[in-house]
Image 1 (spheres, rainbow, N blue to C red):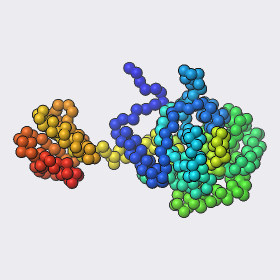
Image 2: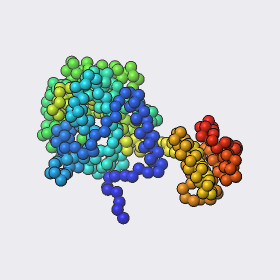
Image 3: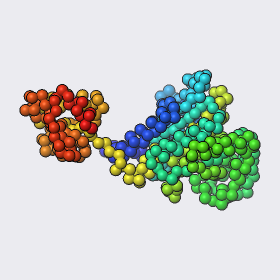
Image 4: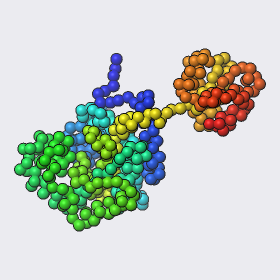
Amino acid sequence: MITKPKGCVDVTGDESLLWEYVNDVVSTMMRTYNYEFIRTPIFEASELYHRSVGESSDIVKKETYDFKDKGDRNLTLRPEGTAGVVRSYLENKAYALPDVKKYYYNGTMYRYERPQSGRLREFTQFGVEVLGSNDPIVDAEVISLQYKILETLHISNLEVMINSLGDAESRKNYKEALVKYLEPNLDKLCDDCKERFKTNPLRILDCKVDKDSEVLKNAPKTIDYLNKESKERFETVLKYLDIMDIDYEVNPSIVRGLDYYDHTVFEIVSLDNFETEHNVLGGGGRYNKLIKELDGPDSYGIGFACGMDRIINILKDMDLYKDIKRQVEVYIMYVSEEEKLHAIDIAQNLRLNGVITELDNMGKGLKGQFKEADRLQAKLLIILNNEDLQKGLVNVKDNATKEEEKVDLGEIVEYIIGNL
């Protein structure tokens, strides 16, 4: 028997209800904030991710799915969403338009890593990218949007962990201080961190192996090396978050795992799940140099990404299934072929009017159809019989109160809509 690849999952049954629920909340909230849906390819030229994410990142060095196609082109399965959105923004010359571009995406990503709960090789992320504005209000809006989506999903006790990496000058000053501090302590760090010290020392702060070590706990803090302009910018972002009533904590250890970030970086956690290994539900930050580095104009960007799989796991732990049901509104019952023809016609008309309708597809008798209607928790039953149909009538039964009423066949759609 052929089975699914390691690190991939099937979404079926009750779990699919949660996925539909989350997708509906995300798309509704994105429209409310006036974000435009964007879909980019699942695979892109490998160079895109090597240039944007960074050669020194774990994603590029260890986790990307790289392959050559039949034209001997180097391609990579999408490991994250930002690079593809920026590539599309540049290729389609959206930067020439007068407005700031506010995009959102929702799709699968691929990273070759050890599969575990909340961390798969094929996983789904939704996220946003705002391109063309450097106003701190955009930083606050992006954080607020992510926070409010999670809040709407009933995930409790949320908090934003926020930090600033500053501008180029601030990062340079901080990097010098960090290198000076880390150099005599390298023997206390893991082998990956020793390699990162040569390529990108800031990446050491994001190490999952040494995150609790005294070396990293006592490392210099980025916010202590912000120049005046960067510090004022960060304080403005925090002021806007206060106005938006967003709970946050300034956490100097937040640097994020990708090389393109500067200024604001953040993660959102559920404090109720803080002791779990994968308590971070999503995060992001500003990337004011990435667009230019990908051969575009000197412009600005900020975004976030949320892991759907981690969110679904939390909703499952909350036993949210009981509040989300795929409930059938009308179940149509029949026995004879003539009754079946009327059932098909009525079902089609109800469905075209937005009524969730089902009918027997297995040739069951009435007893079996009653059981199926109960299993589907149908609100109303339409019970067809030839005698009523000859009089132009159908029998409608309320499955909760068990009350029944004869309804004119030509008025059945209006009756059902009026009684749901």
